[in-house]
Length: 148
Image (cartoon, rainbow, N blue to C red):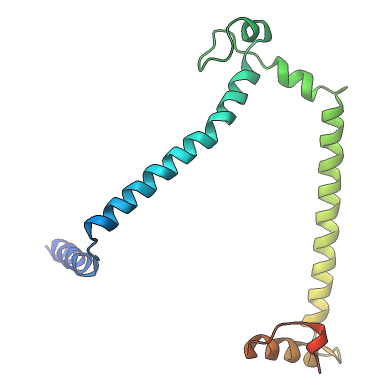
């Protein structure tokens, strides 16, 4: 019985805090939702076309074209693109290597600098942090030319 009282109280609170919308505001919201849904369909359409074309057998694609449910599915296009002798595969490997090394170096550099700034025994840390925080709190732009 106490659960139903709590549920009724929550429902009453929700009714009190609900803001009434005018008819024009509601029509504007419906129009916005419709426009966003249409934009989403227009945006996702080319991606669906590319995925469907890439999964369709090449001879079937030449004869029939792209269909949503082709009779002959294949991954041959991806095997050609990502095969071990492919330049795209080599470029992808190099890109992933450079990204991983760059991220690791960036993380190590940032962690080292953060550790150095976290140490309170370092002489210039206190003045640097107070200068930066006073500039942020006062609304002045954080710019090295404004340091005193």
